[in-house]
Structures are given as structure tokens and as C-alpha cells.
Image 1 (cartoon, rainbow, N blue to C red):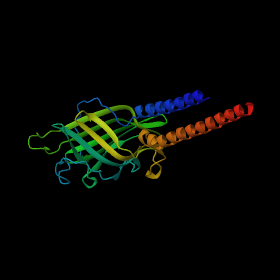
Image 2 (spheres, helix red, strand yellow):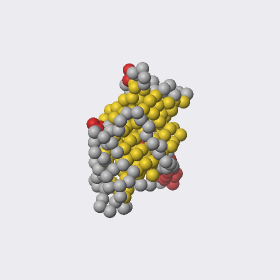
Image 3 (cartoon, rainbow, N blue to C red):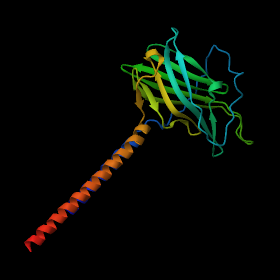
Length: 261
């Protein structure tokens, strides 16, 4: 009976570890990207030259300020709503540099129709653009463009413009009328030297009742953080029950042996 109990414990532990590994491996948030040329930003509005100076990269990472922004269609109805904090991360000379987007120096541009929405956050020296697609009963982000033109981060660094594009079949997927939410950091890897972090993130396009977020769809990182303690707790309880059962059975056998003597 002892060997059988050990086998059961090992099977439980292996199955739980396999579940955790597969869940973490399937996390769609930390995404690699195919880098391609970013098209020029076409906008009839004047450039934002009076809102902020060019982005200044910092050597230390700090939490980005969170802000709420909306995009309306021609009829004045909210078609995209987002609550997020945006941090750019660039790598120069084997060091990371950081820039947090300032909500007061940012404006929303874009357009939307029944099947597609382009939602762009623009600030002087950079932009972040999401392309939403509505397909059947689902909506998702099919493309993310990012651009950053900061001041040189160090004396020996040149002034550069960092650009990147990430393509994913169904990024931030949710059913129509629902919003995608992730309290954990969402990292979009645009290039080996350039990435964007969104923390926290709640975003929705199409079918916003009264312009408000719909029911939240939980991201994999949040789901794993919530479920891992539950799974480990269940495994621990199972191990304790098996140990108690094994002790009771062994004790009964011993008592039966004494009675036969």
C-alpha cells in the first residue's frame, strides 16, 4: 500500500507541474514580433509640438501613470475605450532605458466602423497604435505599431528613432461586448532593442453599452496567478489525505497482525 500511495503522490505532482507548464507556455502576452517598416503617420491635425519636449529616456524603471482614453465615431458614439499605463523600453549599449507616456501630453486619434477600428495614442516624439478587427462574435487586436524618437540617452549614443510592428492573429481577444483586462504587465516585444509595456490594461472596441466597459475577460497571467495557489493547495490537501489514509491502513494491518499472534 505504501508503494501505491507514493505512485499516486508522484502522479499528482507531475500532472500539476505539467498543467502549470502548459499554462505558462501558452501565455499570449509576452509576444515576439516580426519587425517591419512602420508607415508614416498620416494625420490632418497639426503635430503636437506645444504639448511636450522630445521624450527623455531614464535609466531607472518606474511605474507608468494610468489614464483612461476613448475614441468616438462620426456619430459621437464611443467605439474604443482603454485604461492603461504605457512604458517604452529601449536597449542601447547593453543597457535598458525607459520612458513613461505622460497622459497630459497625449492625444487620441483614429477612426472606427462596424468591422475595423484604428486607435492611436500620439505624443510629441512617439505614438502607439492598435488596429482592432471585429470577426463574427469576437473582436481582437490584429496589429500594434509603435514609434519613439527620444533624445540620445547617453553621451556616446546617437539620436535614433525606434520603430516596431507586432502582428498577432487574435491579440487581446474578447467576445463582442466584453473587454480584455490584464492587471499583470503586458509586454509587447517589437524588436530585440525595443518593447512596450502596458500595465495595467483594460481595452475594448465595438459594442460598448453607453460607452462603458463590458464584462472583463481575464488574461493568462492573471489567471495563472489566481489558479496556481489553488492548484498547489489542492495538491497539498491530496498529499495530506493520502498520508493519513496510508497511516490508518498501516495501523489497521499492524493491529490485525497483533490479533493473529
